[in-house]
Length: 239
Image 1 (tube, rainbow, N blue to C red):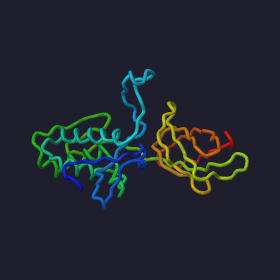
Image 2 (cartoon, rainbow, N blue to C red):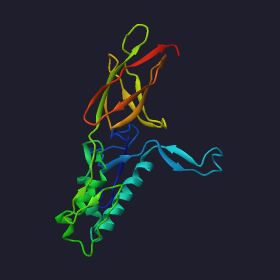
Image 3 (cartoon, one colour):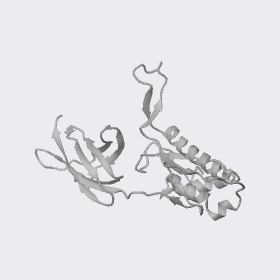
Image 4 (cartoon, rainbow, N blue to C red):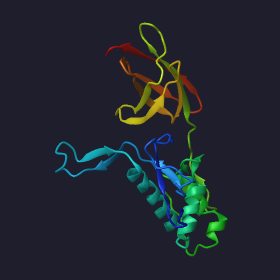
């Protein structure tokens, strides 16, 4: 049963793709996910006693996704202290992107802040302050956000056997950021002929893969806004 002032958060990759282990909407059982946020491969401070080699650890799950939504709600409340919990929940939901029946949508902080500063919300605002942040965008007096967003690029290609040239089906494509080689996204699967196609923000990435009985040769790819980049991956048997 949905509670009007309770925000339930799902877990997605940085690209907005839902993580299989995340909680999802279940209309039959009355379970509602308000929206989702990135929660995979999040770097957290870690008790040095439990891990003597590092004070940080990469974790994943809704516990990592929820703080993003909590912070967004806090910023919205600071902009407009008169908003109720129910109104903040609706602002987060209506400002989300990539709508999905499974997870409601993905947190979009600039859009949510625009909603908070809209004429309807400002009607209940007393002594509101305006936030200026280089990380989020600069607000005009009319409440709009001046933020430049780059359109994602598309990466497409084929994973194939280096010797036979046969496509490798159902392999997992792993995307790492460069130059730090941290995992940005995983879980992308090749089709029955070994082809894959997905979106990424502009930047440089390393493509790698996991295929049973094969060793995939990583490749670096440059992704450009609004453009499609073709990059095939080769794999050797038995590595």
